[in-house]
Image 1 (cartoon, helix red, strand yellow):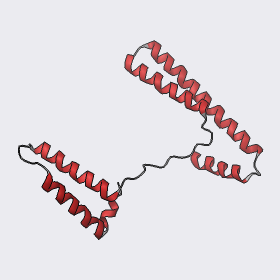
Image 2: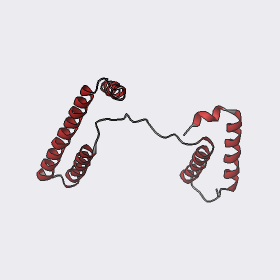
Image 3: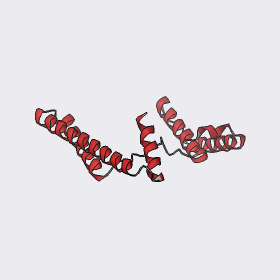
Image 4: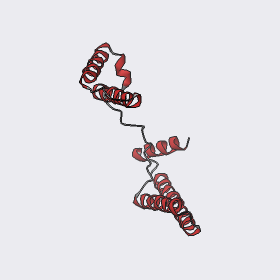
Length: 139
């Protein structure tokens, strides 16, 4: 949430007004302390979300080498990991280890392929930007 917006006087007043209205509408009788707290927390969080808005979340680095092959290998690895943790047998562990190795191979081959493409196109300005992105991600 953009809670920093509550520092603005107009936004803060709007938030207080909305919380006050919702508190008056809420039914408080017959609630225990924990239920009372949960209801108050819900009112405050909902009001803050409505007034201030939500953030999009952390920024993800753009991986220029990510492709369908890598995506499929990583998805399969995650599935095998879940099966291993659920069943906890040697067979499922070996399956997970194989899929993990396949994912590592897919990632390294995709990175190597992308690096070769960029090395061949060093004069291309679009590829120069990708090289800087890749260098930034490794640092």
